[in-house]
Figure 1 (tube, protein in one colour):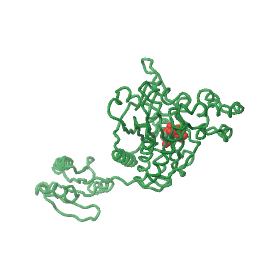
Figure 2 (cartoon, helix red, strand yellow):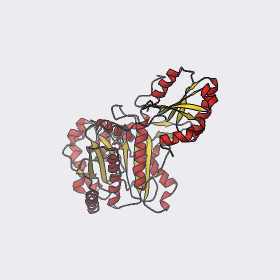
Figure 3 (tube, rainbow, N blue to C red):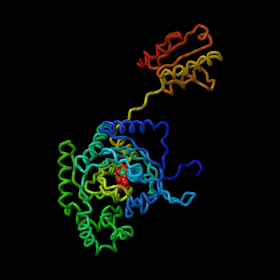
Length: 422
Ligand code: ATP
Ligand code: MG
């Protein structure tokens, strides 16, 4: 137990972290291009925030939350998703008192007690964005467009955008009545969770992963056929703006989305190549959430994207993430005096923005060169006691094998020019 990470968690090893850094860099870049600013919220919140903000009838709240009492008896939950905390923060700091829309992005770990499998973990990570204070359908499309651009920047193809409208408080009630009528006779065949959803939020039943439930709801009425004029018009405009942005989409009237607070536009990006966990990104409009959590009525749109699933998608697309470059310089030393000189040089190199390392284990010269190779150093500097006396070092280009003598005085300038750091 002691030397095993908890089930459903994963270390990102030093040999893999460049992939995460690359994705984070690209995501930040796209967010910046679109004018989004980063927010960071705590890893844990009051449980009530998620019960209210994610919704009591969701799988997340009903089955998946990491909830515990802290030492003062408060109920605390590790964040299962990124939106509710951002909304809490918006309300707490009254961020809505400034000009709108507000555009935020986040990169966060999330915690859900689920059955671990490929692309489904108990600790996973999400990229997400939220836009507050905009009703216009073009904002829904801007959110979709950001995801689209992000995938493009990564070179991902074969990802399909599915969209739907899931109505609003004006048209949902009538639909819910129709859905309940449809489900009434089938109630006994549904799973326990779905039975409990029947009264509170029957639409949630459509999102159940249980195969038996899926069969029962096959011919259920669809929200899209019951939209009010406002929702219909909004949906039509979303499609229009998607066309303007030249983003292909498919309408999937079955999209419900896992979370309770969605209204109007709901969308998913699906990768057909990562098997059952194919939803790589989900999002939509949640006009009711800010008010639901005690703030003013502020419309909002956003998405959340699982980073682990994104990595799987890239892998299955055969996209290789560029490896970070190795070290600029490794210093091989021979002798005591040289070792001290090397240490001084090491500090000066690093101060000049040149990445550098040296041997600390008293290895043989051959072993030091081997280690330099392993660190993928571009150049290796050799300093012996004789060289220190003469004020020179030997510089070896590890790719070409070319070797030359350089004075210690001119070394840093010389390296900067060789490494293109002028
Ligand atoms: P699913 O239907 O696959 O359970 P979900 O509807 O619960 O997904 P959301 O709550 O919308 O997912 O979360 C947004 C994204 O976060 C998902 O599209 C997915 O990429 C990722 N995600 C969700 N749960 C997990 C998990 N347990 N492990 C890894 N990634 C996850
Ligand atoms: Mg889920």
